[in-house]
Image 1: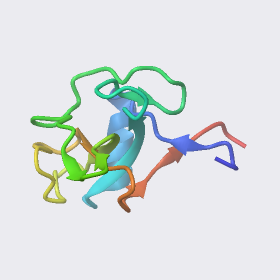
Image 2 (image 1 turned 90 degrees about the vertical axis):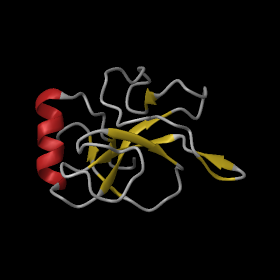
Image 3 (image 1 turned 180 degrees about the vertical axis):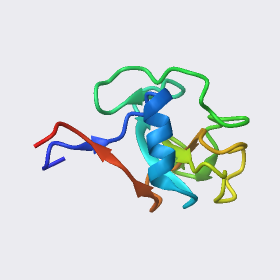
Length: 113
């Protein structure tokens, strides 16, 4: 954030293709979407718009309760092979929700310097 960047907003199409290419077959990556403000309404942190589209994996988002004090409120992008053993991830290149404080890789985006 200090460099004017934010977690990526996955707009699908060419951007999704680029993200999956950059990720390779390396598991799960954070995106900039979450439903922390209103449960069940995922928004992009970059511009506050609602997350739209049918890019969720099988049975996602499922708001799984990982710990008594935290539900799955942040969005992951599952790599192109669907690796990582993520339940409900289904085919690769889909979104899944997960608790926000886990340590996954991430891609940031922002204005060119």
